[in-house]
Length: 131
Image (tube, rainbow, N blue to C red):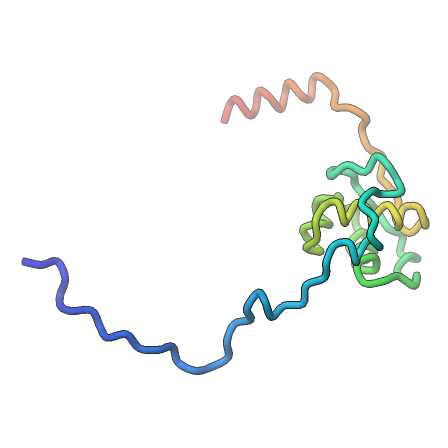
């Protein structure tokens, strides 16, 4: 006895209706357009875990699209990696734009640890091993 109850139903074309946008339909902006062709940030030392914070006064500054969005998102402290995900651009692009905002005084870098203490690294290691 066959495990199938019968022949498969005939193929039918999908019903007409609104189609999902194809990737080619979306507007694509090249990263070099966002950074003015620069690949290196003006402000050095911006790591992916660097926390940024923007003052509320920066919201009224005359900023372009991505810069304005960064200032809006950084009203609460946010890392560079989180910004890249939220805006949907590569980390290198975010670092260049953020460096411009830091240089212009719209965003400030939160205090960050130079190096992690040995005790913290060992504690992390022990907890990972416990998994």
